[in-house]
Figure (cartoon, rainbow, N blue to C red):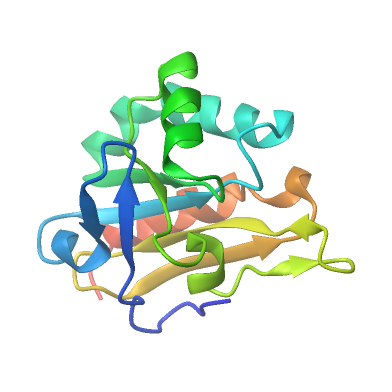
Length: 155
């Protein structure tokens, strides 16, 4: 898993429309919060995404762009996004899952996909990194909130 203060990874993913999305494309423009769902069928992860949707205006006011990363393929991710009316880009991997690209592997004999979040500032530095095997702990709302607040604190 990434560490706070480290450079953001050079993630190259694909959105549900098949467009290439590079994390580096956001550098210099705004901060990015990536939430990595365990799966689109996980009710706890879906609850976390609903909270992000409810907070969308506040996140936008803080100049934070939200991306949702899922381990499913693009057609399945597109169906989930449409069904739930997700306003954020939903991303999948090309050759490997987005989760593996940031160190969120499968644990417990390879059956449990880890989930979590990272917040990357405008300069491309990881300001928050959190990962866990249990989905109940994957959305570190207090940690994300504190990291977003720190974006506006002078160094």
